Amino acid sequence: MTGFKRTSAVLSVNYGSADTSFIRDGKLINQPAGIAHFLEHKMFDKRDYDVFELFNKNGGRSNAYTSFTKTNYIFSSTDNVNKNLELLLDFVMQPYFTEQKVNREKGIIAQEINMYKNDPDNQLFTTSVQSMYPETALADDIAGSEESLAKITVGDLKLAYDTFYRPENMTLIISGNLVPEEIMSLIHQNQVKYPKHELNVQFVAPQPKSLTGQTQILAMDVSRPKASFTMRGNFKLIPGEEAVSLKYELGLSLLMNLFFLKTQFSMMIYIIKELLTIHFPSKLRWSGDLHL
Image (cartoon, rainbow, N blue to C red; front, side, top):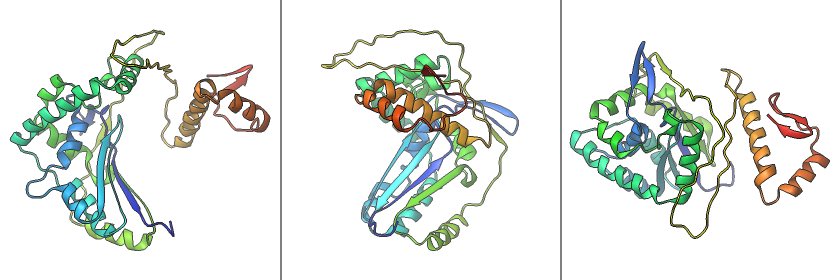
């Protein structure tokens, strides 16, 4: 990206809050809800240095977040890009767990959970997902609950880290005014310190039960009521067919925008006039109206 001053990078681990059940070397393992988010917090906790402080010294900013399927570690900077990139690669690959610090972190995350309980937008989203995927890992809060936090042990964290925080289960994306060959050389030199250890790991996808339409009302002290319309898709991802799933997702997004954006009428007219040749996935068809 020539002409840009800022460089940004994300190191993404293929592991999220919904991955509490998995098969490792033929053995089914079930872990407490919120453990992926707990690991995200613990990766910034080191024995003898402060990750955020080092990024700040290098003129960078760092953050992280956990989703249902991924844990992402991020930095952006205009200076010392190589130093910040090495710091990103190193701190994620150098775990530090002690029982004392793990117990301390439980209290911090419990406060975070309670804080989000007072956030109307968060509660709306969480309740919507719970209604779509009841009795699955997707129905659990990404951060877990105070009850699930109490169950997390140092051994659980080490097992989850060893299982998923492996270079072959991670993706690094960098954007900026960079020379790709130089960046790749830096990455290779850094990763020599972290030998691969292949594991036979299989994700156990949440299996939602049959669903019937329902309406839920949450009573909160807000000045402006909020509403959510949620629809569960029926698409099953086929390995090697990721492009098809992307078309499906874009089709659903377009459908929701047509009905719920403020500009939905103008958008509908535009599509009818200009985009009738757009290719929709086979699951989406025009027949009077757009339906699945």
